[in-house]
Amino acid sequence: MPWSKLKTDEVTVRRTKLLALRRQGVRYDDARVEALGYANPGAARKDVVRALEVHRDEEAAEVSAYRQQENERLDALLEAAWPSATTPSPIFSKDGEIVGEALDMRAVDTVIRLIDRRAKLNGLDMPAKSELAGPGGGALRIGAAGLAELTTLINAAGECDEPETPDAGEDDD
Image (cartoon, rainbow, N blue to C red):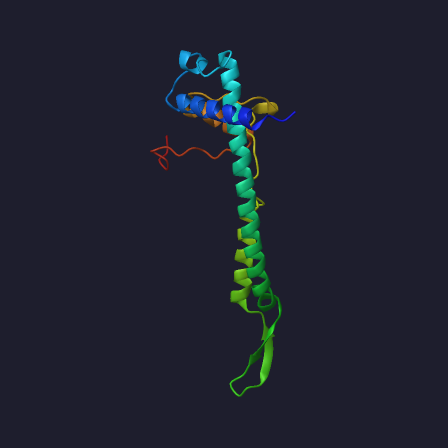
């Protein structure tokens, strides 16, 4: 059953006060938080999470509306540039005769930039995820390591270039 308008307003006021206290650095187990009507620190913590989720949903809706608007603008620009980028135009000689056909390379460049912008806007160009693993696919321990240990790890990965040293190029004979 949905909350009444009064209950919704009370929760909003209480969450607002709780968030203000948290911004000031007040801990969940502080008496001021308890005075807002929370039964325990866990209840206050859950309420902060709920408040943040509500704002995240509102922000996601705004981002979605903005993305849709930008996609519509890109559609209009792409529609205008597409014919020039895909239909060859005649090339005329000095005396006015057609000597060939060519695409408008500036229009092609514009179309490519619009497509690139759309891919970025919609997250299509997200970087590939990669994971580092130790020998045999196990966990890779990271900590303070010397050059010799790092070289050993690189060799185990199969891609090792000899590290340059200050006296590179001198023979050790």
